Image 1 (cartoon, rainbow, N blue to C red):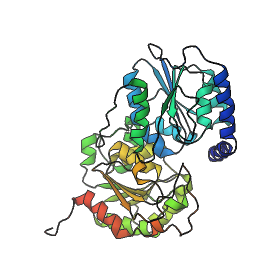
Image 2 (tube, helix red, strand yellow; image 1 turned 60 degrees about the vertical axis):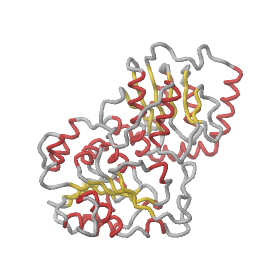
Image 3 (cartoon, one colour; image 1 turned 90 degrees about the vertical axis):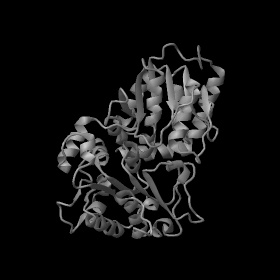
Image 4 (cartoon, helix red, strand yellow; image 1 turned 45 degrees about the vertical axis):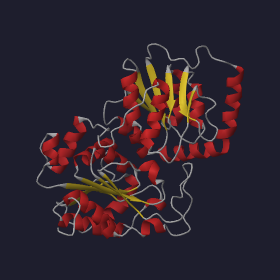
Length: 388
């Protein structure tokens, strides 16, 4: 139901979004609202709208932290896809997460009945979220002015897909507060609640304590072989070769994924000793998956949502990158390693849409196992020199 509803909403946005936007823009021009564009003092309620997948939901957390710091007395809520509500439940950064695709929009209707002083739309391209922002009636509404969708906002911010996503989100906070918001690319920004970490320690057989967990005798690698789009998938057999190499380095491997990734995960772990290679794909909630990633020593996947969880929790990450925009998704961090072939046709994703590939996803096929092992080895043992 959730995925089908999201596809329906995206289709509706493509067909009707711009037309509906123009209708509401006309209404805004005819009917001004008292106090529009002026922040109340104090700000007591904030809504952040975050459509889209897991990656964007993770990378919005620095913005949430900036809003919490700027408006400490405010109640902070998020409106997101149902699949991401568990992500916001992984910690206590927000007071409430609503799902606009749950109960046939019932939660969305409830959000529209509430009162907010400030609404921040973090969507980059689609029009429906800008309309929802206006329908809340909030006096201050901030969002990205892309594709002409900024007319319903009181505070418009330019967006570029050549800027790392976290920094783009933080530009919304800068527009609202008038202050530059610092971002330390080496510092984790996605906390995981202790209850989920305790579950992950039980799975991994690790004792309590953050630093002690990372210094455990048997290091752990997390591998996520699934991907929502075929343009981002790497051959499962290559993942098997990578898993074999990781176990040869003395690592325990945990394979993760959602319900749709279970067949691929089973193929990757087949034949390995269950004491050394285990799959929790389809069996662990998003919050528990985040906890397992947080306790790991290495994370490897293509361009998927959990990849950004890994960076957010501080786990060293190897990213197999193909169709997406490298500048948009890759931070300049020492703990983040990207494997990218930079073909003439890559990136092909534009305005949130990735077209069918006429080249059999060559950008991913050209990434061989040795490419990934080289980056993983740098993380596990440090960069090798001719003398070593």
